[in-house]
Length: 398
Image 1 (cartoon, rainbow, N blue to C red):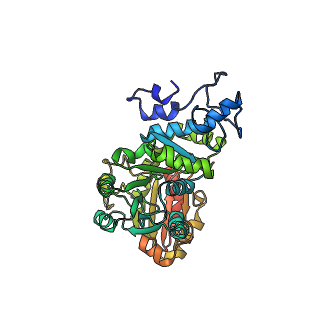
Image 2: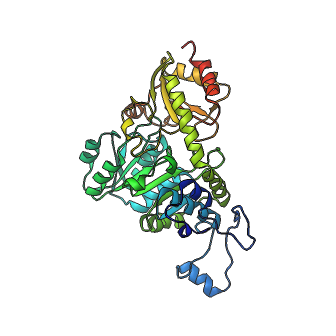
Image 3: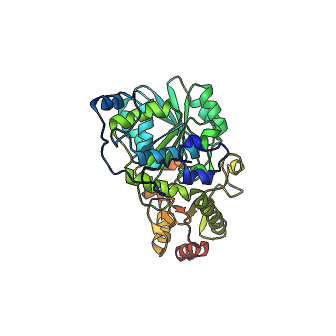
């Protein structure tokens, strides 16, 4: 079983995460090979012309046709339930490719305020230069979403759960709103991955990933992905990739293939550990508030079990004392990695106001609910007691 169509529809998620996309070569290799080649050789000038025109399927140039990258694309498309996946050089390249492929000057994006800081910068600073405007609304306020749509709105964009406050939105209802007005719904599924949430099944048109995060799982490589149907993704987004070249390297694709093999197991473990950490943080006197979808007092907790299998591996929390206290907690750690990356087997911690969202204005951060005392913890796969002990070094005495 090597081709996606060879798999029975009832084939389980974990099996597809290990098997889909691998086409063995004449060597009969058990593991997926890495095709480290810039280009591919044709048997004749006629074959070259047929490949370039699209009359004949086959490899041409690794910017847009590479067997290792294709294996990753097919596997992730299968896991997300999409017809086509386009792999990109980074998660931000995935967002840019979608916008370049589907929008034009005069169009408008309607976005949640609760998104990654670099995404906000891309929308506000760079896309705006080309006449693409962005309007922001509160993520969970469905009435606000619908009220903000106008005749120029083409695309609704959200992360759910959001970075860093884990705010969620009802994807089924948001998709209904988008489609009622002739708009597309694009969902960044980085925090959950298809192991915990599949937005396409809930009505979304396109799903995005920073493969750098949980899809890799060990903080090794940078990459991104766009998943959707054969027209939007397979033609429009792929056209941007082929022409502009924000492509994933074959080596990185191979690393991500290895990451997908353990995705189901890892996401269960990340969620279990994060839930324990979130409960423990609630008992700490220095902690003012904990943000985690698995907590019963999370504003959108009811969506757990409906659109999301569990709470995921990200916990955010406010500490008393603002930036000075938050930095003290960070600097006191001895095991947890101080880095803005997430989704790693190693737990990581960062101060969003001065890192991931540091390029935003204070007013923009305030509108997103990102205060000076906020910390984002990506719970890894270490022993929970060891993570708690490391956090205690800084929390004690605040």
